[in-house]
Amino acid sequence: MPAIFPLRGIRYSSTVGRLDGVVAPPYDVISPEAQTALYRRSPYNVVRVVYGRGRQTDRPGHDRYTRARALFLEWLRQGILRMDRAPACYPYRQRFRHEGRAYDRWGLVGLIRLGEPTIFPHEETSSIPKQDRLQLLQSVQANLSPIFGLVDDADRRYRTLLSRCAGRPPLASVMFEGIQHDLWRITVTAAIHRVQAMLESQAMLLADGHHRYEVAMAYRDQLRQRNGQFTPHHPANFMLAYVAAFDAHDPGILPTHRVFGGLGGWTLDRLAAAASWLTVERMANDVAVQERLARRSASDSPAVGCYAGNGQWAVATLTHPDRSVRLDVELLHRLIVPRCLAPDPLAASRLTITYTQEWGEAVRRVDQRLGTVAWRLRPPTFAQIIQCVKDARRLPQKSTYFLPKPLAGLVIHRLRPVGVPPRRPMRTSAVPVH
Image (cartoon, rainbow, N blue to C red):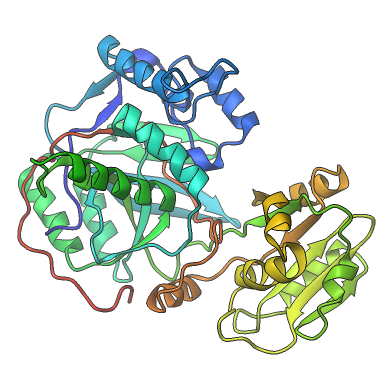
């Protein structure tokens, strides 16, 4: 069947005023400070539903999940949120700059069928955020923001088709954190079928939203077990997705650095003790670390930078190549963590990890004693991620940070039946990404 389906999207009405007051980034990149700032923007900001504040008085059945449901339903009753009259797919363009160059990223917001063999996740997930998202989905029964998928568009046919389908002033337009987001709507069945036909043999790399994707499948499975009338057309078989075009000329992936805490009096001497398999080069300063990492190409063995405070800088590399550890993030999480940082269950339970795209922020956290050691990682390339997919390897959490991310609040999917029927059965490919 087609890779994407239309939906009757729920969107903010004009009564809320400016869209930049009510949209938000995906929940997993919202810090407590950003959450507070989004709350202040508008009483109708979607963060209040997507990632609401907890309260000391919360208890099961009276918590931020039930508040999210009540708020969502109230906004629907008030007309703050309105459902489009006809099923549609939504062309979505993001205009942004990266490293001094301007980009237009085109994609389509629609529904994907969960568990399709042509959808390829590449990161591991953990239980705590999945439990959080499952409780929210069970309560609100809506996809509040799209997951983010990428399809190969080396010939640019997909984005050309989307730009032609747009062809008029956007339905919604918002500048948010320096990125221009424009949304259109396709309701004509023939036009939707053309997009479906173009995507039907495509594979989709899941760039962002692994936890939400797995949670949606768990929710589907729960309903299937409880509901004897559950069919392949039940709305829980589908979820909201932004399916975007990419090729070799698209911007790279941002690194995601780590700050580890809960390590007690850990120093670089503990790292240097692993000399039989790890080479640790002491560095004079941060500049030396960055230069050392920059001189290594993507084909070299993995390497990570390290800052342990008080002038302790280093770069760690494998002493001998290991085919099972090819990326920086794998070196850190597959070898250094279990062997040097958390070698037993008690140490692992105490270990805390903070993620950031800003290396300066990671260093500051160590200097302010908000963490013990910061790790500087280089981002994997598209080719490396695709190879992981082909090898059926899952990378550790937060291994990639694709930019820019789709906004929450532009289109919402309440779990209701999909619209235009499939065009024809989808052909699958044995090769996930070309």
